[in-house]
Length: 235
Image 1 (cartoon, rainbow, N blue to C red):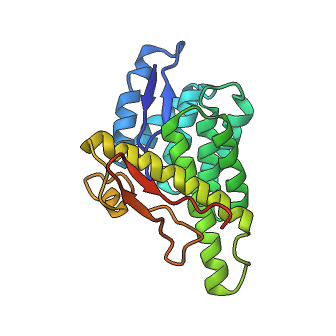
Image 2 (tube, rainbow, N blue to C red; image 1 turned 30 degrees about the horizontal axis):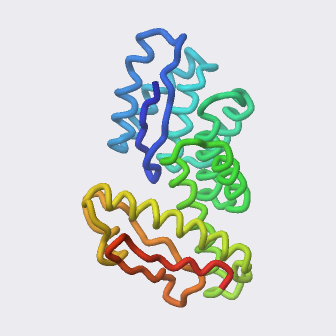
């Protein structure tokens, strides 16, 4: 059994129900997840902290606290707990989530290179499509931001052609998945990519960048049989 846990800036985070935890503890898991969904991180932490003290080796509660700290913006402690989880529970079914939280904390905490490596590790080991989508979006954001900083500030050089191709491939995968989601909701493809940004909630918050286009956009056209999407790899 897997439970979905909505986090701040993380659309999906799965936790398995423990098999040996006392019922009184597991009964509070839905309450914790509900608080996190409402972004009431302090209230969730007040429940989780005593549980951690009582069961410091419980991997599910450990990961709960890690995720809450990420949502609160306490990236230093989140990184420490994520590393601790990876060291203590290398065979955990949730190892991919621990690497994702580690990478997210590092990126948001200012060490993007380390965060990029942790996110790539999470991508390699996960089989969760929702988590994979979050990883790809964060990696795309890292590469896109690196390029803009180099161009605007004259500091670090723009991303390399290889990095641009990697960003482009990730962006295309994100767009194709978003287009499939749109079709499932509307039984038709959108007239333009901006329609993916509409709705409550929207399918996408922002459109993935095309690093080979001056305006950063992909060429898209709805057709009778589906759609056409440019894939300018290596341009």
